[in-house]
Length: 621
Image 1 (cartoon, rainbow, N blue to C red):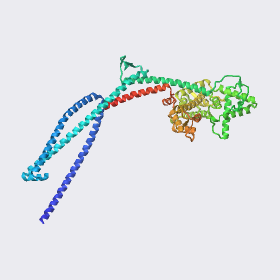
Image 2 (image 1 turned 120 degrees about the vertical axis):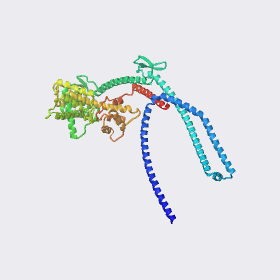
Image 3 (image 1 turned 135 degrees about the horizontal axis):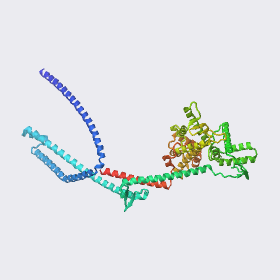
Image 4 (image 1 turned 180 degrees about the vertical axis):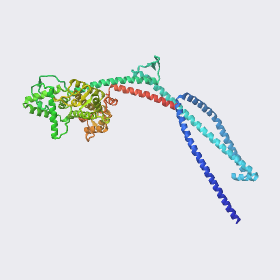
């Protein structure tokens, strides 16, 4: 019974002690966890600080090149010293291994002397011969010495391996640095040799005895040139080249404008009293079929303008009656038939009809400076679509509505007049892209100034409502009884026609510029890309609409068909033609362009040399 009670007491005692130990360990665990969290947080702060210090050190690397070279020299000396100590270390390792083997041999001898079959049996026999405590002390000491020898051996082997790897890496890095320095020297020499010959505009550079020299403007002397002043001189020479290229492009654009105007207006007008009949062939319009001489009736401008307006009004009445859409360039013969019907109904006799028709065509050539007459002339010749005429007058109608809306905001009730400054501001805002609140037909600064300058001519005429400080826009934008229009309106209509024709020509030029000569078809994607290049700010929806009007549901068309349908495109330019992006796409691939491309490649070579210098410096460090 006492034994059971004693055992129970021990059990309670052990449980209580176990609970105390668990409690103690829990408190220690919580303390250790807290310390570990603090250490982790401190390590994070230390890591951030180390990162900051690392960035500072990286910025100071470029300035510490000499210090790095000295350190590298010391490291080489240290490596040489370690390499010299390597034989001694190997000898020490052999000595330790030899002592260890000798001790192992002594152990085997002792086992043979005591007839022991194992180490534990030998230990048991020694315990019987000597004091047990002394034997345990000897065994512990031997184990500690053995462990220390093993650790020293492992440390020495690790250091030996690290030393060998470091020597190999140092040799490879040295070889790579020498190779890159050699390549950079070759690059630098070649660049310095070709700069004066390839860039004659860089007058600051001069090649003397196969070395490049640079003229310092401060000292007025030639100094041996490095890469930085050479690149600065190249930048100045590129500015000179760019200025020459801009002047050449401006002259080319002016010449193209004159040529395009000559092509659009056709042959020049010459006064004559008689015309030569075109004959009675099938390709000659019915109203012009005649053999022999025809008298010129010398129609006045008012008569010609009136006849043009009558023809356009008859065409509008015919469209409303038949419900047909506006004609395109393919239906220009309808106007010849309309002209024939008008002449036969007015004059009756064949000869009178032919005389008036030939005189009317002569009047179209003579007075083609007005938009209405010019449009009729181009439509009859098949060089203009009918929509262009209606589009121009629709543009004037939209401008009138914009001015009318502003008049309602300024005057109550509206007066049909605006101050001159306000009128100019509204007109200027009207000819801006739709994204900026305008009509969408973009007009550059020069074109706008040319149009506003015509107001002075209308003011001198005194019949168009233009005063020094106020403009009657109702009179200014309306047609006179004889069909004539103000100089301001004529200028806007002329710019509308020339801008659209120029826009179409630019698209066609860019398509041909980027299309291989052997390719016989054009894709809708190529046309869309050309429109985006010529007019980068045009919305995607408008570009897709133009492409769809050309291709319909097809994706490819022959080149001739694309050129023909492109002439029927109804769209206005959104981006200024003087924009650098547009000029770059209209630049011809001439000898000057190839020279510029070659010089750009040379500049790229200079940049590559500088980049290689930077990489070599990093690898060397």
